[in-house]
Length: 490
Image 1 (cartoon, rainbow, N blue to C red):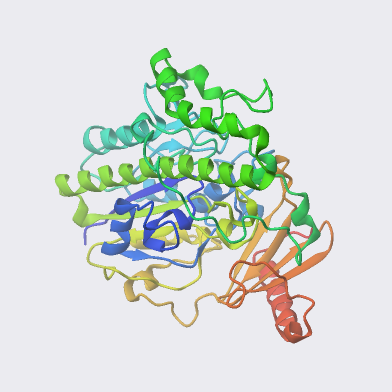
Image 2 (cartoon, helix red, strand yellow):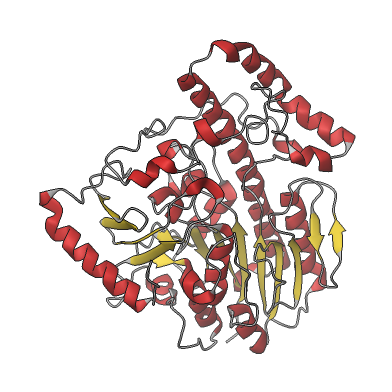
């Protein structure tokens, strides 16, 4: 049997609510037809979760099949990925596959286990991006990073790979990561669209852990006028708040970019002195969402280009295609942007997969899967033996039948260790198909959510006598999974 190729397309901070195949209030207004194609021709997982909702740690979980506290990359502040440890690309290399990664890496050390790599340094840049080279050099490409990452991936597929071998290609986009610098071809997308506001946009963080009020990721209080929201000049006169990407642009690029925002900014600045704080938040939300979704548009078009190439080259019939992102993201829910919390919008990550001849088109498995499962899954797809110490499980049985086997996990474990950025408190917890338990060690608080009755997680029921039995059961499950995954004490 011919071993399949694997094309893993990965973006950064792509919320499920910004993929129209998942439905929701944005689906009709901001469709993603090319990503949706994977759902139509394959499977879309509605209960896909990350183990640690931050860029670097999520990537490390995927490579190793292990939680952050085991693979060593627990945060973006102090961690460096240990490239000497086992990763699934190394296993594919040993099995005769050709492996490549192009785009965002964000793990500090150079990639290992890849025959070819060309990666962004750190977070990378949106305009005229630099890519680190395998020879130790750096190469700058003109244009927008989404377009360039796609072109490099297509060039490798078409011209640079050894076509006598099966391949694993990880095409990893920077977009739609903050600060949402859009490509010129998307300047006018959504210009006249008014997006619906989430019901929790004005959340006051009552009825939940006290630590929610100390975070620094609110659209109203923490999103910057110029760098994030592209308002020039800054309405508060803050000269330190700048769009750094302008320094990377050519004069023509900078002029076109400024012109794209000029008329809207002029109208806004005239109104600014008399606007209420509520109205400012509503305006910020619309500007934020439009730029975010414009970045998503570029990623979706990239997926379309890659799928078209597979079709035209004849590779489609034997290539497994996965679309995912390192975590979800807040699109105004709870008044937030960013991620990190174990709340649904950021702990959920997209997972769509097409495997011709194996997955029934249009499948929507409800099994609880996690990014620690990817390594074991990829290995089984290719018929490669997995190490016994992986913490994730292969989802291949689910892909073949559309349903989870009886032995499949009934809950996922999540752990965020804290970072300086955004002041989100350390916490961990467990989630089943109905309930979620979160523990905040800095304040020794518990939160319990009934996701069926309170899908927006607006009220913790940990103190409700009617949930006493559920709380006890969830605490027991929490202790069990912490032990199983060898989670350190707080």
